[in-house]
Length: 383
Ligand SMILES: Cc1cc2nc3c(=O)[nH]c(=O)nc-3n(C[C@H](O)[C@H](O)[C@H](O)COP(=O)(O)OP(=O)(O)OC[C@H]3O[C@@H](n4cnc5c(N)ncnc54)[C@H](O)[C@@H]3O)c2cc1C
Image (cartoon, rainbow, N blue to C red; front, side):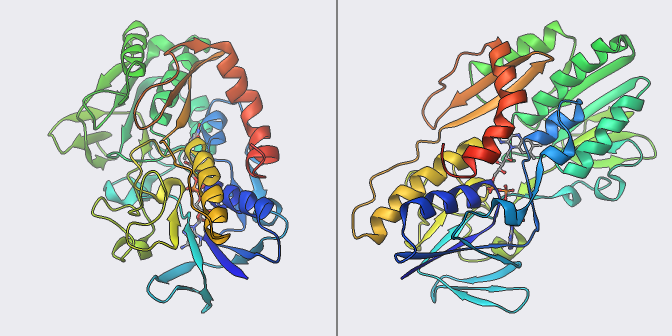
């Protein structure tokens, strides 16, 4: 009996567990997920909540409801991995041994890395939609906003869903146009990069949209500190932006217990091969989802593809075959550009795939269809 241990019951962990369980009989493998939370959140829905397009109760389920049948669930927090002796340890004193370990612990939100943010979140005009509670509070803050400067700051790359800041800014613009108050709202997107989006042709398209819709874009702005009394944010480059409402996309990192361990690479993420998803030092450890160092966007769509590749290769390995599948970096990032339109940025490690086109059909897929598909098909490993 092969012991497969999955750390994290987020998008990547559940999708991998489901696909493995479909393929491996109960006699071949015991599959266990260790997850600290009792809830699973469909995080892509958080952006929709801010603009009244989704309700919180639709994007949260009890963790037990998404654990695939035939997979064991241990609710606990992992705080140590011993990759030499093939076991992990947990906060509640468990020692769990494995033959294969799948790391799917996601990305940690590091609000504390920008002084002035964490202690003021939800107050003093400082908001985020990177947490569910934050998205709900930001929705209320936008409803009550009477005019002034909205500024979005973001941490350095990589962070999960790098298209999310653009979605927020474009939807905020349209939201205030619909309320007939855009003339009273000044909107600024800051980015640490030299342009708002890293990939062409999408970057050029967004730049045109920002110009047409009078959205300010400040590039090479690495937020250093937020001063709530003076309502200003300073960058390491020495620039200052004043705000009435500040939206924060925080820096991201891996879990603290992994940071200085043997599995992280010099970039600070789990060092696995970008095609095989196998750890570079330990051949029985895989990394999928946001915790991995793959040079593509950290998205649930990427996690889905990675889960598929991992499952095929691990099943082949367990059965004594040769793993043949490779992850090519494919992701799709659906970017809402206004009410009724969305642009899908689709690319892999090598090339951009979809046209830079705003379409209603993309909107319909993103706003009405993806969440039900996520619960009923993606998490079940069916697509
Ligand atoms: C606002 C926002 C909008 C987004 N929009 C999109 C979008 O439109 N499209 C898209 O594809 N993606 C989007 N994403 C990104 C997507 O949600 C993530 O890429 C995806 O959730 C990654 O899955 P994961 O399993 O790697 O991480 P997660 O889903 O975050 O899961 C990680 C899990 O590991 C658990 N965990 C961590 N450490 C431990 C530990 N030590 N012990 C036990 N359990 C642990 C956590 O509790 C968590 O449940 C968005 C994300 C955000 C925040």
